[in-house]
Each structure stands twice: as C-alpha cells, then as structure tokens.
Image (cartoon, rainbow, N blue to C red; front, side, top):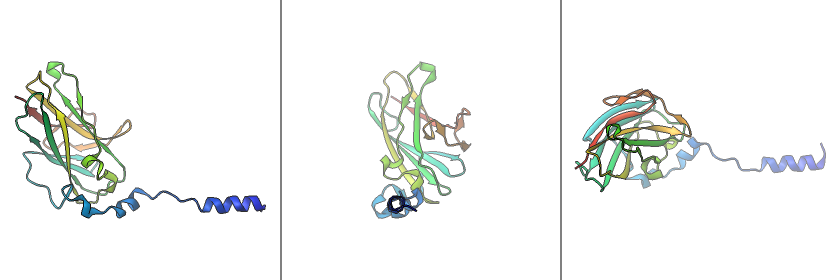
Length: 180
C-alpha cells in the first residue's frame, strides 16, 4: 500500500460519524421536557384514539377558547401516545377545512411539541403534549380538523381512525371546531 493511500485511509477512519436517531434520543435531557412529555394522558374534551402504523396514537385534543372566536387565535392541544419506538422523524400535518363554504384550506403543519421532542426520540409509553395555534377564519361557522404525519411526500399509514374518520389518504378527521 502506498504511503498516500495509507494516509487517506487513516484520515477516513478519523471522520466523525453522525449518531443514529436512537443514540441521539438517549442523550435527550428528559428533565427539560416538563409539560411536553407527560406520565399519562389527561382527560381530553375530544377523545379520538386514532392509530398511525401501530406506533402512534392520537389520544385526543382540546381547544381553547371553545367555541373559538372568528378572526382570533385558537390554541389546539393534541395528545399523542407512543405505542412503540418510532424510528422516523415525522412532522405533524394539520388541515383545517370547510369544503361546503369553499374556504381555502388552512395548513398548520409543525414539528411535535414546537420542535422540542421529535418523533424519532419518542419512547414507548410517552404521552406528548403538542400545542399549536391558528387564526380562526371569519367567514365560516366551523372548521374540520384533519391530521396525520409526513416526511416529504410520504404519509405515515393510518391503521385505525378511532372515533375519527378517514378519507383513505392516511389522514384522520378528528372533529370540528365551532366558531362564533
């Protein structure tokens, strides 16, 4: 082996490899996730029980204020439960729709827990409190809430819609938010 090939081989051996998501998850300081990772799911105003790929359950959600005010901010809190280890870093998609009115879809996609606790860090049994906000439209009386998970163009399979409903596009209609 030539001297330059040996030097190149030694340099390549010294390159730091990125940690796997599982290894990164072990480094998370869970004590700093108070209010995000809960010991158990609270009683929710809107139970759902939708299951995604046998890995994640949408326990349910709360809305504040309820009913929401048109043109005002609305806080929605999803409660997710990890049914198993989640290997991929999924983003939550949210579609707020009112097809009957011709309203444009409101998209409230986000990383779970304001990006503080990505899905590939979730441990089996974790309950994740996921708050997000949108401004209620002024021209409708209600909006339907649809949700699921995605990476790029790929959606996580919806195994069971629970109390929700599905349109066959790996998203679950969890309910409606009334507006006044």
